[in-house]
Every structure is written in structure tokens, then in C-alpha cells.
Image (tube, rainbow, N blue to C red):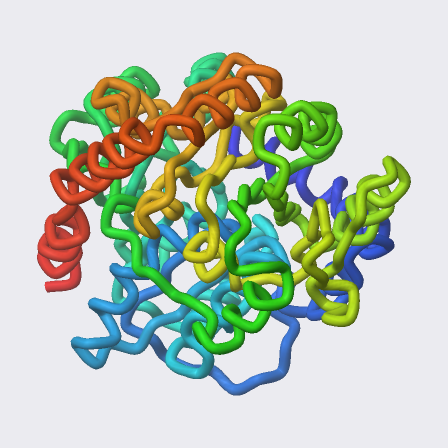
Length: 418
């Protein structure tokens, strides 16, 4: 089965390259560093102790506390990502402290060169990235690989289960699987993982590391837009979510006249599109990269930068977390919670179901039916300061009660490395 898959992958290479070119129309970084994806880069070999694969920005944020633990032990760390946003997050958070490149395409000769170049003592793959040749070649290179913070959404489980005969041998080549929840552990076992491979560890996102832009820089924005104004941050939004939220803005402003909406699109290639969308609807719109457009009469400001979200959460009074009004599955609601901000999300939170369920159980998250419900709940919460304080306190309690997962992962990784 893996041989058939490999033949298909080779056949797809021209289309993969065309896709990179296509995506680079919106984000030029996609056509840069393509050689890394084939391990054609001519940089000298550099042996590392730990290789960590975090597919994109969210996974890099989640694994940061674990990487910081490794660096504190003077371990040499390589982080691979698949997307430019993930790459930028690595560079922002770690600068030259870690080695970094894009993960190689899942072709045997690419991944062989990769392991020959870096010779890691252990490989750690975040969440759900099951690349057959990558995992198989690691086995041949005597590199133990663990799947950490492992999860399987309903959609992913359905897909993998249909091809169970193909994925079961891949799972058998993993040294260990650390699952986020009992349900995730059961799902991996249903795909063919053995009980001896599996441990329910918990979700390391609860141990998130807060990385912020300088408060002096951020406070300049707050002074410009008006320090007295209530601020609602719509974070990590995707296509159509901005339209849905903007449809409720007039109603919200009727109840909260001086409210300011900050919109932080998830993908850099959408920054200008979102700015144009907001401006065309007639809202007084600012753009973060153009300070002269930031004024006290702004209705909306589009945050067209990366790596500063935590800082803007700190300046906000309410947060909506994106990918949840459209069927993508939701982003990290724990980041605004860590900044003491009450959080709203839409109905589509399957990528963080266990976290969402825990927060809702403790009345620590506003899990809304849609954009209209978001608006209604935001207005109600603003008019009830006591309830707002209770939600913040409940969310902080859930966050603190679930910390410590990184310690458990680290102890197991040390065992594997020995």
C-alpha cells in the first residue's frame, strides 16, 4: 500500500509545485525556500537532538512551552513546519535558538536526505500529521518518533478509519502516542495503535507560553484609538466570518456606541481583502500597518501583522475566536483566556472539542449558535459586569487546573531519548 501511495506522490509533484505558485499570488512566501521542501538546500549538515514537526502557526504556539523546556536543557532542536505562517511563528518565538526548515515532501529520497542531514535522537510530531514515508524512513534511520498532543477530530477519524488498512502499519512504526483525551486514545486504538503505544496525557495547549509585543508599542495604538473605548477583537478569522460579524456591528454599536472592532485575519494573504471589505461597507476603517489611519473615530481596525495577537488580546475587553462560524473547527480559545479576556466562539469547534466542552461546563466560554448569537451575548455581557468577571474567573480556573501537561510529555520524551 505504501508503494502505491509513493507512486501517487511522485505523480503529484508537478501539481504540488503549481499549487505553491498559485498560493504565492496571495502570499509570496509560498514560492520562497521551495528547495527546503525537497531537502535541496545546500546548508551544511547539522546534527540535532530533537526534531519537532508542527504543521502551522497553531501547532507552533502549542508546542512552544515544550521546546522552551528542551532549550533549557541545552538540547539542539529542529522545528519543521509546512506553512509560511508557521515558519514565521518559529522565527518570531525562537529566532536563532532553534534550527528551522520546511518539512520535506513525503517522498522517500527527500526524507532520507532529511534524516541523513539532521540525525535527530528523537522525532516529535504534533497532533495528527501521519506521513507514511516520513515515519517509515525515520524507522529505517533508527529515529524513534512519537505523536504528541495527538488528536483526531470527527472528520479526521472518519477519513483515517476508511483507510485503516493503510494507516495501521504507519501507526505501528510510531514509538509512542500521547493523546489529548480518552476519546482520542480510543480512536487511535481503533485505527490500529496498540494499548502499549498509547497514553492519555492531556492537552499541552493549557500550558501555553505568552509571547507579547512590547507594551509600549501596543499602548501607542490604544492612545490613538481612545483608551476609554471597549474593544472587541475578532481573532484568526477566515473567509465569510468577517462578513457575518460585520452584519451585526450596527446592532452592537446601537447598544455599545463607542465599541471598537479589531479584526485579525488568520492568513496574511487576506489582510488587504478584509480591509477592502470593511471599508466598502462604509465603516471608518484603520489598518495597523498604516499608523496614520488609526484614529479615535475608527469603527474597525484591521490588524495586518503576525505574531502580535497576544498583545492585542491584552488590549481587548472581549474576544471572538475564528474558524468557528464556518466549518473549519475553531482556533485556540485559551490564548485570550490567558490574557483575562472573556471569549466567544461560533458553533464549529470540533478541533478543540475537549477544551470547549470543559470550558462550557464551567460557564467559562460563550459557545454561540452564530453571528447573531455572538452579538446578543456580547451586548448582554457588556451590560452585566458581574457576569463578565465571573466568566473570566471561571476560565482562569479551568486554565490553571489543567496545567502541567508539558511536564508529563517531557518525562516520556526523556525516557524515549535514553
